[in-house]
Image (cartoon, rainbow, N blue to C red; front, side, top):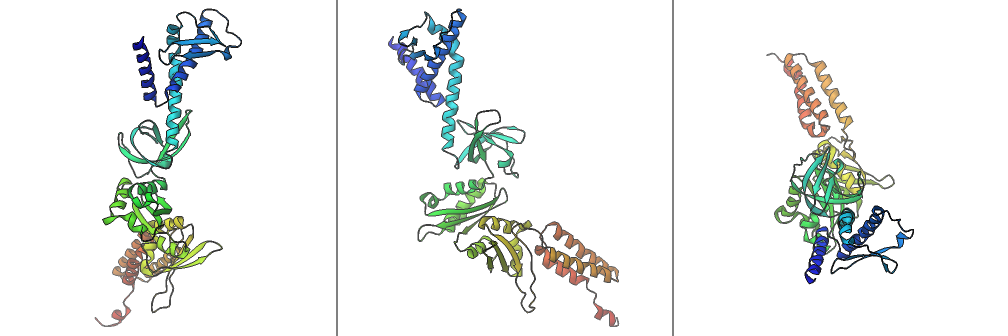
Length: 408
């Protein structure tokens, strides 16, 4: 008898351990299944189900595993019920245990929302990937993927546990993300002890997943450099985060309560920046040297776009007056990163005039070359970057009238 008690107790504890639930949850599942089996047994024997059946209770001896059915205090367990209950109740017990297991898993992952977890790509359905997280399966929808990344089966990556939501097939599911800006902040928290201790705090983050991230940090402790702490010695900390994100570029700047200083820092790597604030409309006009325009704007307007997201200000960029001319050449750029239309129109006009004034074959070829450079600049949506080449091309198209007048 002692052996039977030991076997039942061992089996009870093993099931509870495998499912990750309390042994009492297993016993409750057996009690519920026993009542369902007793009701079905009555129906099979042609006996009526008592009207007060909802008040019936069942008991399971945690030592021996013996099951009893009670009508109030009266034991109504039929002969051989243990065998009947075992055959009828198996499905009910497993269903109850699976529900309890899912509940325990979701409770565990609810506490992990906003943290980083490691997982392996297990399968793909359409544009959605499923991730093996260990005890649970995570869902990586298309909107949470880095679209420049390719995912392969069994590939191990780090993911942000974004939320627990109702699944399309019923029940709850763990949604994970690779594109959420919080993933970058969480990865830095893993790499930087100063963030874990609270000496450095991430105040703002703007991200274009797979391409570039700007992150602003502040020190809460004297003598601690927030940027240096996050970069690490010889860049080891930031390199570790970039490596996890597929070499995504990361700009780390110091946060400032002064909007002008914060905006100037956010436009890094551009330098010598003057910021004029319009507090009412929350628009910042930025003036900087001509040679810094392309750095401030970035390829396709990415740098100024991310700076606008990071600071929460609309940013308009203009070039400073050129020395010795008093002429102010503006590059009208905002946080949206659109092309500098006025510059394009002016250059187009110069190219057109050069083509019309061309008299020799050589001059025509030079004018065509200038037009090709212009088209390339417009396609890249960044004419400021090609400005120097364009100006050189325009000079080449100018007719040297002085040499024409002199005798050869």
